[in-house]
Length: 183
Image 1 (cartoon, helix red, strand yellow):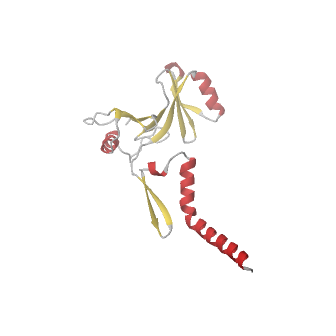
Image 2 (tube, rainbow, N blue to C red):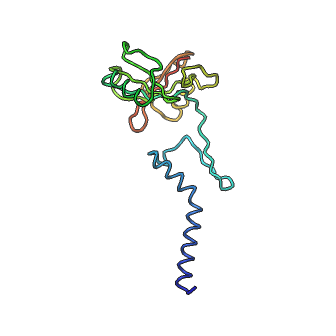
């Protein structure tokens, strides 16, 4: 090989080696970028590098079943739309202006005239089949943890009670989050 070819091969080799070393970091950044989450905003995960293996440790807050509660204009039209996506009515009543629809483990609440915006809903103590689970964080425990981290609550659970209770807060983008415990 002549010297020019050798330089090109060496540059390519160094570039390839650096790419391989940074691949894990690049993949993680790409995944979070695609998900719309900046790495600096992820506070519920702690990353550690052990023997070149990246491990994510989730914060141990058990929020329960998750669903999206949608503010709909026409409950019947929305019901038909989500049925076309494979959802079936799981709970609720058209006469009461709400339906909970399910597709495997995915839950969507359809609510007509009950609130203005869509809401992210968590149900501590329930699984996605509205069945009680033994191991969960009580809404009051979650509330105390959030308050200790500076999260401002729009409504609070009464911390002197036990059993069913709820709280509401918003994320940095103004999305309402409803923690609604039924047990």
